[in-house]
Image (cartoon, rainbow, N blue to C red):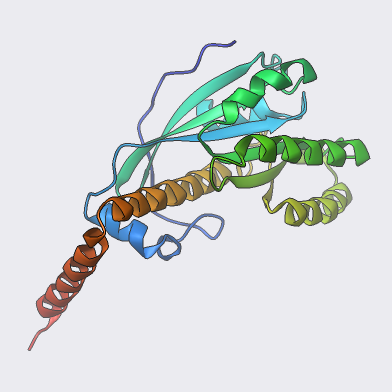
Length: 252
């Protein structure tokens, strides 16, 4: 098993939400309020990257975490863990990105890694997309569902890599099938290039936003279940804050 990458850099502060990411209003009201009032605890959010061997999983993660691309990436044995810091709505947290082995002989080992995952990314190779590729995606989806069905809601992404190697017509053909398959497995569909870096930062920012919204939302729900009066007090406090803000803005 490869050693985990423990080096942490400065937080990636997400303040400007493009169309490809969350806009601030897309986060639930409970999540926004919890972030404003400092009621969010320290988080490590787990993202699992799966897919067949040589589809470009490691190159994709390497481009995100290390800002580099190696054409001859060694096959992953077991898994590699990369830690990336993000800051959303003023709350810093760690995204654990688990790059898993795609070889069949490691499939049973990979199964144990799904525990506590909030996002799973299924990767396929756009340049070599064929019937076997799509069947492989379905196989990985089945594997994901088998190991995450008891973990609550897991957000899925279907990601095509190596876009830079494809002609325009190949991209159209792959998208036609890929979008249909993504709808079938209830996944969000992306295509990108680890070589050029196209859409890689946008994609992982999107993943971070989805994971963050889900995790904080669950934390707020847990707090409310432990203390039934918690929600009522928050609503009262919020109304007072709104009234005070209106009074401050009044020029009468």
